[in-house]
Length: 235
Image (cartoon, rainbow, N blue to C red; front, side, top):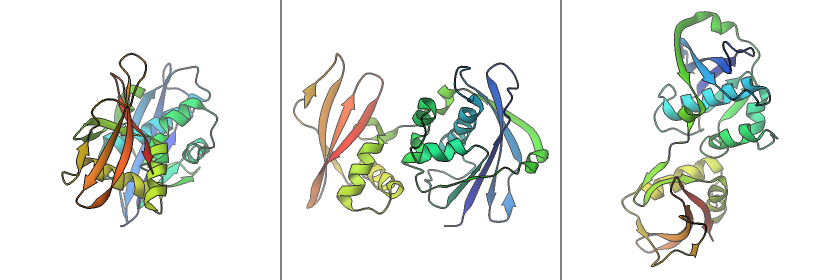
C-alpha cells in the first residue's frame, strides 16, 4: 500500500468566538490535493482549545470524508500535525479528557497511523478558499453496521481480541473484528435473556460469533437507548 499523508495546521487564535480554523491537504505519491480549511467550533473552557480543534478536524476528514480514501484504517497513513498533543493522545499519554475522548479513533482503527509534528506551514499559502464549518457533533464516531444493530468497538474489546487471536497490531485487530461483525458468513447467536439487568434501559448481553467448525468468539455488548458497545471479548 502506498503512503498517504494528511497534513494539518491550526490557527491558534480563534477566527470568531470559540471557532478555530484548521487547514489541511492530502498527498498521494507526488500528487497534492488543494489546500482546504475547516472551521471547528469548540467549547471555550477547554485547555488550549485550538489543539482539540485540530484533532476534531482530523477525525472529521478521516471518518466522514473521502480525501484519504474509503473505509481505510491507519495502515499506510501518515499524519503531519502542528500539535504534539495529538500524538500524545494516540499513545494514551494525554491528561486532557476531551483529547482522550475524541482520540479513540486514533487508538483503535488508526492505531497504525504514523503521527509526526511538523512546524512548517508555508503550504497553507496555497489555500483555495474552500471552508467547511463543523462542531463536535459532526465528528461522532460512525458505528459499525452489523446484523445485531449499530455497534461501537471499545479499545478494551479490540485489545482483548488482539490478544486472543495473536494479531500483530490493534489496527489489524480492529479491521478483523469489524469484518467478522459485518460478514454474512458469521452467525450472531443471542442468549435467551440478558446476561445482567443493569440500570433502567441498560442491559449487558453475551453474543457468540460462529462460523462452520471454528471455535466461537464470545463478545459482551452493553446496550442503552443511545448506543451499543462491544466492551470486551471473552477468551
